[in-house]
Image (cartoon, rainbow over all chains, first blue to last red):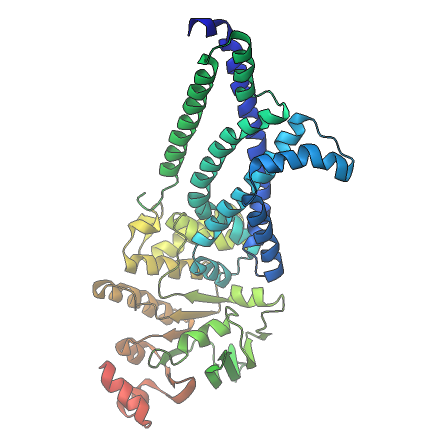
Amino acid sequence: MAELTPYFGILLRGALVSLRLAGLSLLFASVIGVSIGMVATSRFPLARAFATLYVEAIRSVPLLVQLFFVYYALPLLANLSPSPYQAATLSLSVYGGAYMVEAVRSGIVSVGKDQWMAARALGIRYPDTMLYIVAPQALRVTIPAAVGIFIDMLKGASVTSIIGYVELMQTAVNIRNTIYALSPLVAAGVLYFVLCFSFSKMGAGIERLLRYESR
Amino acid sequence: MEAPILSVEGLVKNYGDHRVLQGISFQVQTKDVVVILGPSGSGKSTLLRCINGLEEFSAGRIVVDGLEVDRHRASIWTVRQRVGMIFQHFNLFPHLTVRQNVELAPRRVLDLPRAECRARAEALLARVGLAQFAGKYPGRLSGGQQQRVAIARALAMQPKLMLFDEPTSALDPETVGEVLNAMRELAASGMTMIVVTHELGFAREVGNRILFMDAGVVVEEGTPEVILSQPRNPRTRQFIQAVL
């Protein structure tokens, strides 16, 4: 382990890069999740079909394949040449977005029809019903799921090392190639664990906060 | 005679092949308390939900306070503001406190100032005897208390007509009375009400007209004395004997 000491700073920076990538992607994924999640619960069958298509298509293709598509195929198809960072963010956002759609959709569906009916009977229209009645209740289901998705995205971010994006995983590989030892990989594993486990604990805490039945 | 607050003409509602309402017609005048009786599945709840446009109907015409009920017109929202509804299962918003439940619609729909919404909520909660529960969440209240909150919530919109869809059917027997009392007080204050219920005592005492429905038609209509004591229709007679 001693040989690793000089590299701790670099490893931590790699972890921060991974966090930033996953965090930014989570932000985009959330925007996708909320907007398409609402489409997925709309009363228009065609709109719902579109949302389902997106979710199923993305969830059925490995992240690595999607990443290669964005990084290698997009330049050929659309004359766009994203940097590894851009390709990583885009792939991870679209990938996480599909899962977020499901999280948002199941959150909205978890709020019973009787709530919509009560709101309508009071004259409250769709936007206010969504904002003040459905969304706050949907969060109880959506937020814990979103924490899980974020953890998956954080781990999934390691895949982007393959197109040369230097995050935690690639940092560890680079150090290993310098000092010829396994310890950098072990350290990366520990860092991933510490991060993911903390977020998981945080998620459980949020879940407790969102429980209002017993208040 | 002034124009009725509610007029239902030839109301028909189909669910697929099944005709739930087969041509219902009746009128309600201001300050009427109309009780609708009938076996389950007779279309009572569906009828109520057609009146404030929660449910689409297949044929016929409903006019509330001069407004045609049509789910595809913007005026349906005005209808809903003027018609309060009480559900069997209360349908309170569980993530909001009792006071917030009552304040929400006046605040978001009528766009009233915060202070006014709050004053309105507090006055109504006091009226149904729940002032001390204002800061509690509905989950902490008994069924009877929740239903009284629901009444306060509906009244906060100052409706001209109140619909009650089996308001006491989901309650423990010991809390039925407090809800009926709140409804009795409401009727005495001059509120126009349509009440779907199996509480014959309430129907007799508070109702000034009873409609008996069976299989999607109004079988018999009259004053409580007539319907409850000397029903002419055999189906009405059968039902009332069974409930008593």
